[in-house]
Structures are given as C-alpha cells and as structure tokens.
Image (cartoon, rainbow, N blue to C red; front, side):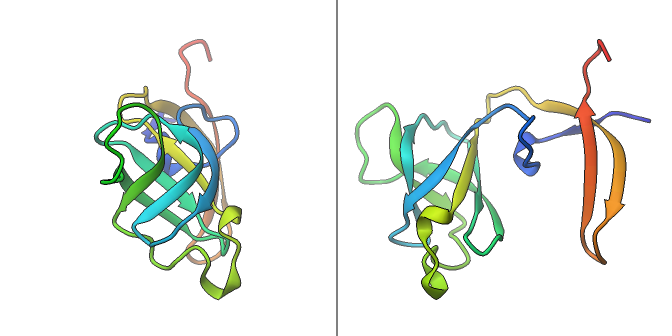
Length: 134
C-alpha cells in the first residue's frame, strides 16, 4: 500500500499532532471568531471549525483588523466567513470546537489501513502514522 500524505488540518483525530485546539468564546459575526485562548498566527494558517450542529468549516485566518499589537491573539478573521452564525437556532457558541494549523508545521504522514462505508457520501478511514520505523 502506498503511504498517503495529507494535510493534518483535513483530519480530526486525537493522535494527530500539529496545531492548537480549543473552543469558541463567541462569534459576533460570521467573519470573526473569538477564541478561548490566545494563539500565534502566521500568513497562510488555516482553521477547522466544528459548529454546534456538527458541520465542519475550513478557512484561512488573519489577525482581526482592530488588533494592531504583535504577538498572540484571541480574535481572528475568517475567510471565507462561516455559513451561519454560531448561535443559529439558539445554539451555544461555546460548543464550537476549533483547531488552528500552522502553515509552517510539518505535515503528518499517514497510512490508511482500513475503510468503512458510513453511507452514500461518508466513509470512516482507519489510519496509522507513516514512520520509517514502522
């Protein structure tokens, strides 16, 4: 089997390292996400957002235009914006999970060792680290 090289931002699994995770503190607009703790961001960084409804949104992040200081930030601008506000249908925005992936972090190498169809448009993959020692 040929190893599969993937962007770790496309997979969500407890064993994958790389990136910083947390919960949303709030989201006043669909283009802004307030984080529960401050993070360093660089040009090209991406974030995966899991809404309270379970939908996944993948987008680029930038510093919020009002943040002029350097260093870690706890408010970021999203591009493209969220498809709906995090508090839609009375959802609690703090039930929103996020994982920020640095563009400079090393990529994870995985070997897919199993597949399990979960419907017409979903599949569960089983993967292991692809390390030369294995």
